[in-house]
Image 1 (cartoon, helix red, strand yellow):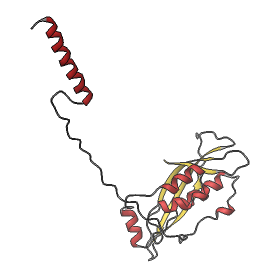
Image 2 (tube, helix red, strand yellow; image 1 turned 60 degrees about the vertical axis):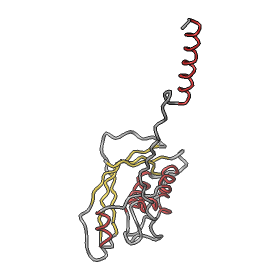
Image 3 (tube, rainbow, N blue to C red; image 1 turned 180 degrees about the vertical axis):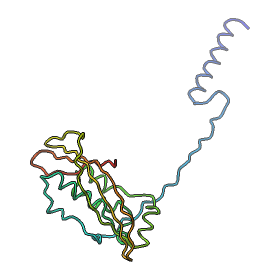
Image 4 (cartoon, rainbow, N blue to C red; image 1 turned 45 degrees about the horizontal axis):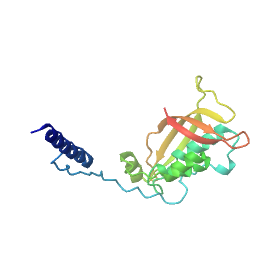
Length: 198
């Protein structure tokens, strides 16, 4: 084969290789079939019924918004006050507490819909038609972050006691919560923004 023919053959082969690359697969082969998998997604649980838990709720209208501790206590009490006769999960209690939340936290709570069943503990409570009573106590420990006129850091101990309408009572659950409360400026009320269980 003469040099010009070799160059022409090489150019043809190069063009074929380039065009095969543009197809996304080697020359003469076919693309592998794509496999798409989807994990089954459980439908969200239905929301609870409208109503007030048997143990009652804080009167949010009477909470002193200038006192971050008063706001935190009301929010935490509402967040752990559940009633299995009207609630389908703990999220129902979270949503009832939104008047004491910042706009961002309230929006997140409103859009959340649990997709898993509440579990064995909830099922036990429900079998006794239980509701919870809640005591939220601020813990004043040294070493926490320093707040400001628009940010407050607090530590709370929350005691939750499930009580059945049939006379059954469970062991109290004790939670330690680190909360951050915010307000836009000193003329605005405090609102709970974040909560971390410690």
